[in-house]
Length: 399
Image 1 (cartoon, rainbow, N blue to C red):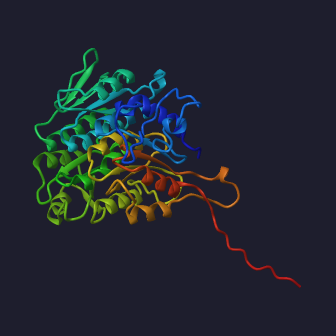
Image 2 (image 1 turned 180 degrees about the vertical axis):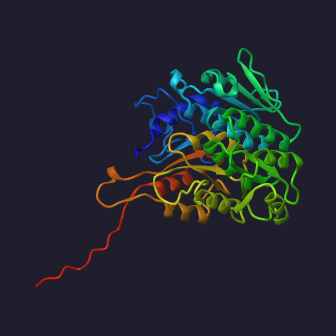
Image 3 (image 1 turned 135 degrees about the vertical axis):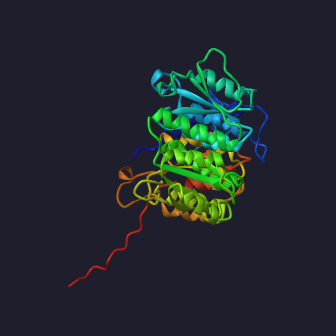
């Protein structure tokens, strides 16, 4: 596996996100600007720092460094779709209402085949500058699977002038998720045999579903802890006894709701009792037809903060391109939770003779240095680094 071109991705992110220009005012706690500039000369003071290293890229990580989910979505969209030729422009852009995290997580399914949309966020009918600039740069081609639409409007969002649009709407998050499921079914020509069910009330437990929906095209539907909404039930009935995967513990989706779901399909629960371990459990999980199964080296990983649910939607295209991989969560800006560090150790690449013949892990860091610190990024980089394996040598026998 080749190493990702982290430096190139860094520059693409710098071009995309409005929070990425030099001297724009945001800084870390130490007062140093962490955003890269372009065209920095080697003779300039602190040239290496101004180019963005290590705050935007290290040898094994690349940062999407927006100060909010809207900027992160713009940065991720430009990293995935450089839009320099028709071959690397998106078929469509999914413009999703940023006022509800549930719209973002369910809408991430549009990043999957066959639509393969870039994901951008809108403040309801008001389009932010970062989104507008990214949309202009992306120049979506028009998705055949979406009736030729260049923009798929998810919820009550802005209507970009001069572009072909199609709309997906619902009166509440459950109806909108059902409508997204129906749209994806129509685009694919058949319904998915698998459905992810997550909590509508505990966003951190639902966040990892966005990356999987983008990768696999499986819909995400929502339930309350102790009740199954009618819109969700109707969506599941349309799938005709699918395999239903509940992501999260009984504290988020109760045993009673799981029992109700069993009348609509086969049910499997996965996850753990806190959001950090829940994401890791999903990353490890696999059965013959479902799951990341990331239990060995050679993968991509996406890191986001557990208290920023819209970042899951913003980052979802990173899980379905490049080095593909699940979303992992961090609880705080500084330091790694023990479970995350141990998981990275478990899948750390190694080699015995020649690292050129090895496999590599790569991490996307989502958010600026106030969201995930540069020190944490450096620690992640170290744990992703390929290491020489220690080999035991049997004592030689001599005559």
